[in-house]
Amino acid sequence: METVSFFSEGVRLDGSLFRPHDAKAGEKRPAVVLCHGYTGVRDLYLPDAARALTAAGYVALTFDYKGWGTSDGPPRRLDPYGRVADTQAAMTFLAAQPGVDPGRIGLFGWSFGGATVIWTATFDRRARCVVSVVGVGDGPEWFRSVRNEAEWAEVVRVADEDRHTRLDTGHSRMVDRSLVLWLDPASQAASLASRKGATGAANEVPAEFIDETMGFRPQLIVGHLAPTPLLLVTTDRDQVVPPVQSERLHAAAGEPKRLVTLAGFGHYDVYAGEAFRQTMAETLGWFAEHL
Picture 1: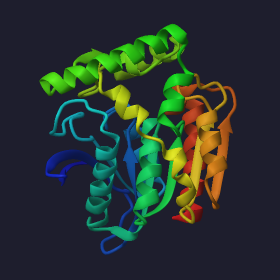
Picture 2: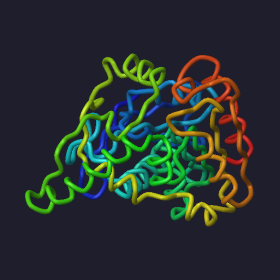
Picture 3: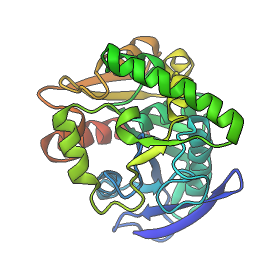
Picture 4: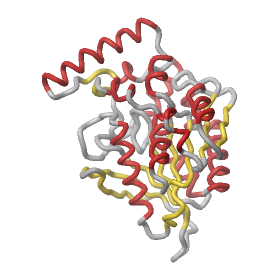
């Protein structure tokens, strides 16, 4: 693994470049940009997926969005359209690397990263194939659906208050991550355990996360992604990003497309163990067929 850096919208981003061990001089391999989720960083979950890809012969790039991990930029904003720009910059960087076939670049995203890669590939045809795993399809529908009435009322109150704060001060106030990322108890425990030691993993985020989530709706544009192939992987017990998010993306997308629902697993299960194995088997099969 090689630590790399490149720029997006004038801001330096850090990444990790993974190469196959059997790569030969002068050989051009297909390559994949991997995008982390809502409050993630590149050192969290993505390295295992990158290593699975390189073992299958792909070059893989993970990176931190602006303001996350070790990248520069305003700290810990969601900025979904900025993440799209960062992903496009990552594609440009990866395509320029020795040993990479610039005409065979794929995108892979976990969770909110699944929303990012769908949006990116819909408008940037350099992405030849897309994989979204337990991905968000519609920001406002997702945000509302996982909360009860009291929780939703609190989100609405904080969002309204913060709009005035930003107007008056130019800054969004920091709130606990749990306000914007609803987790069931099992997912909360899994998340806390996995985030220990992850560089730049945040426990607080700007309250503007709420408005930025509500303004990002890949489901409305995924119908224009075709003919770029789309694989959607979800789980039947996901309470964090319910499977209906992937199901509606699949219904709205054109061919070629595939929806895989892993039985007996929750959201955080896909990052390790048997659910991870099944996820990567589906991913590698999709990339082998279309990339």
